[in-house]
Image (cartoon, rainbow, N blue to C red; front, side, top):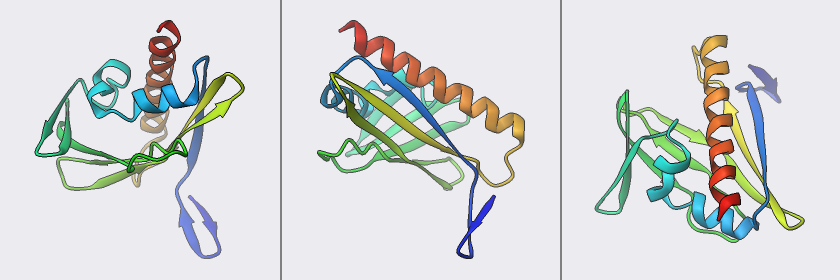
Length: 139
């Protein structure tokens, strides 16, 4: 963890994926929690909406996912509430890049996470973003 002006910041890896599709299209698809199982099975393999709250099924149990309010800036930040009640905040952006877009996910090392766990999570995020690319470049 790094220290910035007295604040301890977790280690962060910026994971980027270029997608040959307009940023608005990428944002629209990725911001819809119903699409999570198709492009982000690392987050959840099934999803359900219960009274306006989105939940994903994972091997660790049912987790709530809450995306940032719809916006024109490509902000896809989302909080994942674990079965324990712990909330993990995940910064994510889609920005225009010519005729395509750049998706960036900021993977933050969680307290107590081993190097192996952090590398595994990085691999899962990279696979999810590659799957998003594959789905959106076909359509």
